[in-house]
Image (tube, rainbow, N blue to C red):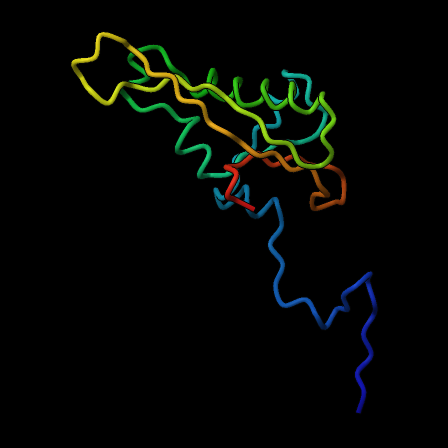
Length: 142
């Protein structure tokens, strides 16, 4: 007995084992929606950051907050530098660098901040409704 499946491009309905939408990833905290601030930065498409990027670089430690660092300021840097990289027109994938102020490893340091140059990757592709969306992540993430 042969089963009938409806073809969609390279795959058939029978090939789909599991789906995980972008909305589910945002709801589950795997992606953090940054679309509102992205609009302020002049980015037209919805933007989300991976949880790893957010936790490691965007969210400042309490000590960094005491030195004036904020989520909003660090997120702005990520988005603005992406906007600058996107204007170069590198296609659907862009690599760029953001400089983050971090607390020094040694408490005896005379400097309040240490600069960390962090390479990021941004991908533009179809979202849940097939409209373009941007995801910003660490270079090793997919």
